[in-house]
Amino acid sequence: VNALYAVTFPIAFTPEIDTTAKLRRVRGRPPHDVKDLEIYESILYFARQNQKKDLKMIFLERDVAHFEVPEVKAELADVNVEIYFSAGEVVKRVRELLGK
Image (tube, helix red, strand yellow):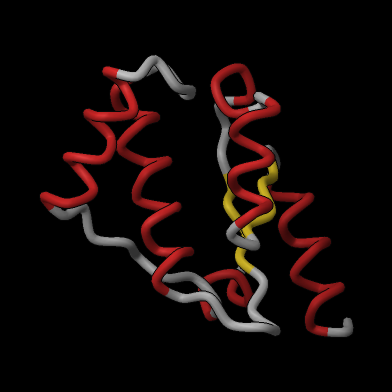
């Protein structure tokens, strides 16, 4: 768990992210829950602002129903974000990335 905290970044919710989340909702694009939209657009914003060749980004989300959607998974993959639905999977992936 401490290894996860060492590679975790908080993402500020900005007016720009709020606007893109609202536009996504108006367009009917997933995820469809308002809070999920805010979270999702925050992740996309952060990922787009921090693109680096060797950077691996991991998104841990409990809500499988709203995020296990082909459009969401493809969009995250386009910005080099891997999505996981259990902390155990994340710990395993972080260990792989750290070579442990």
